[in-house]
Image 1 (tube, one colour):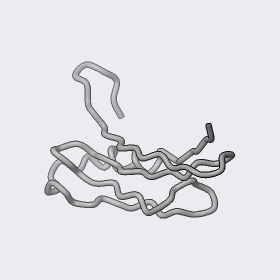
Image 2 (cartoon, rainbow, N blue to C red):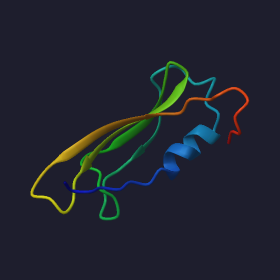
Image 3 (cartoon, rainbow, N blue to C red):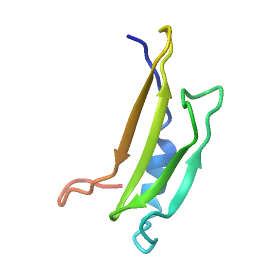
Image 4 (spheres, rainbow, N blue to C red):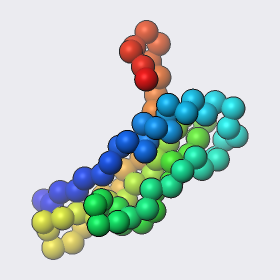
Length: 83
């Protein structure tokens, strides 16, 4: 089935910046593929409809071939412990 991993720290750091005043669609940062991650291409972290969002394409390991596409979004839940 394959496996892949990525570092969520840049995403969490973008959330901690509290970019509410940033215009929609603004790229906060980009994570580049390297030997320590499974990214198949650069991964932008941006503001979309008031939510910090990251698009990720991961190249699978331990399998002949394959990729997984993910989109992370930070959603604040009222009353929940936050960052």
